[in-house]
Length: 402
Image (tube, rainbow, N blue to C red; front, side):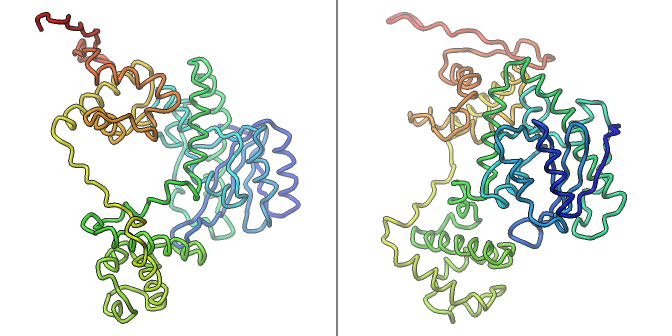
């Protein structure tokens, strides 16, 4: 086990000393403990930081503002090491309005060098360093003070091996020529983990039960969803406590014109009836062309589904050869969209990860070669990690026999 000195940072003065120490290093690791079940924004309860020569537990409940620490995180001249850092990115954005300047995520790096993705912190440290970590405090109450000895030990262990693991994985990335791939993925994580990500605009489409609604009622769903999110953020309450998902859809179905139309709806808080009706009325007054179009349901013909299964298998085989985690490279839905585009004779989707960056250069050509019939696949060795073999298809001569 690591025998680095451990310090608990509980005052503004101690925080200043801690940040000055971290600032003296070109890299450090950090993790957070937070509680988010009963608030819209997660409540930060603890920050663990690892310098090459010291470990820190920063108590944000007593240190005061964390501007100096977050300033180190967003500094692009310093590598900040995290594991599965989506929440760390989000907390940084909430604290500063910025994203980390030079992120290195161990979980992503592991997937890029052939390890399982996503791999938990304990298993990752075990596979890379051969160290066993206990995860006994995963459901602990981090808001209570004082922290117990078990909580403190667990919190230090969460960052104790971050930098050693980073050294190993960054070395493997460099050896495999995948450091640029990793930088691309880390930047993508930093962008997509931000609360203000552009994709958030369409999250309302994931609500169940909207498939049968017309465009005007979809406009109502969209308006209510955005009103709910704004209200939840402003009051720092979980969105589900403002209006449940099923009630958002039910209100759109009823299309109320006044508060009394909603008074018989069970489970709807009375305090927000006026605001709800106002949002409904504003959505109803939109011109039809400004209302969202109904999404076409994914009712692909059998040949698309069958072909997508083959291409998914080819993806797994290619990733095995390249020592990549397939589910880091592409999802089943990504593959299906690729096949669907070919089936429809449409251009490949530009928002598809497979058509961007390193995936487009290293993975997509092999998938398209099989999908377009330019390369044939057969099972060469069913016992091998990559069991397929490929041969170039022989083009038919004009007028020749098939």
